[in-house]
Length: 288
Image 1: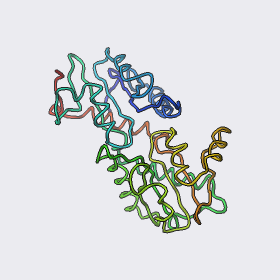
Image 2: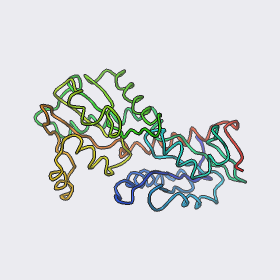
Image 3: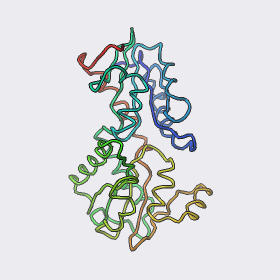
Image 4: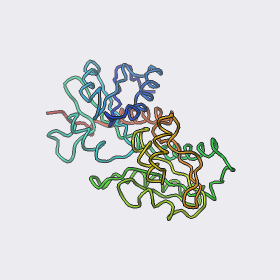
């Protein structure tokens, strides 16, 4: 087993200045990894809120620093914005390396959380547990259920859909659900289209997001047809944004918790670090 006692782990996320819940999963998973006492230090850093990326400088005293981007796709932020801000892309051109030697220190920019194949099992767990927790009037069997994986989508990066589409493909191979399809907030097929796309009366929607930020708590429920006043009342009373199940347009809809808050994400982060620690010397470049 690899020894990381000489190493610092920096978990980097997007964050949101307007909603503290967006950062909660990063603190959750970082705290769990700190509890395990595997690393010399475990730090949190964000693009949109404090502590910002410069907080990674607190890892300067460690021989190795592993940066894990807490994003569920290898897209615009995980592969462009964050590595550039951390200096991994500066002066390195299109063939930038995920490993840099900076004096006596080696920095590893790990692959994003969404790249791990075990994410499909976490999404499956989310789909199963929401039905088990709210079986009224009775728990539908997967073979008579349409499963929708709800993502953000963006035209800024053509790779942003790859992770969700890979997860959907793995679900289809499992052959558990009558139908599995991706839907998006900012791309077609839109989340609101799930009612026309669904081939069954029962629908389970799993938000493929890192945390319970505004997209999960507000945008997706509204796109699914939740009225704004009801949504506001539920949030103000600290209820979930969606009553499970809710009947809409002749369908019975269950809305699961986001993938990124599952406790097993900490194990995925550790796997990504272990993988990066074994990258060969050919991956490495010396920072300018």
